[in-house]
Image (cartoon, rainbow, N blue to C red; front, top):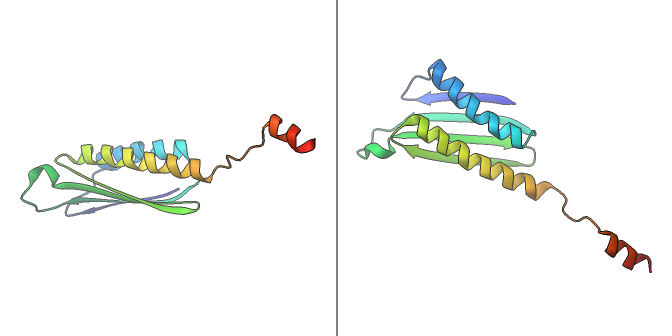
Length: 113
C-alpha cells in the first residue's frame, strides 16, 4: 500500500502522520487489496470555526476508487470521521465484489432430479 500524506496551509508533523497512519490501518485490516491512499489535510480560512480543519482521502482499491472528506474544528476529529466514512465504503465495496451466489444443497438436489 502506497500512502501519501500531504498538508495544505499546514505542516504535517510526525505525530499527525503517525496518527493518520494508525487510523488508516483499520481499512487495510478489512480489505487487503488497497493499492494507493492519498490523504490531504487542509486548514481553510473560513468564518465558521467549527468546519475549518478538513481531511480528504482518495483510496484506490482493486476495482474502484473511493473518496471521502470530513470537516471539523479539530483536525484529529476530522481524521477520525474520515476513517469512519472510508471504512464503511471499503466494507461496502468488499461485500459487492464477493460472490454471493452459492448454490445450496436443496437447489443442487432439485437440479439433479
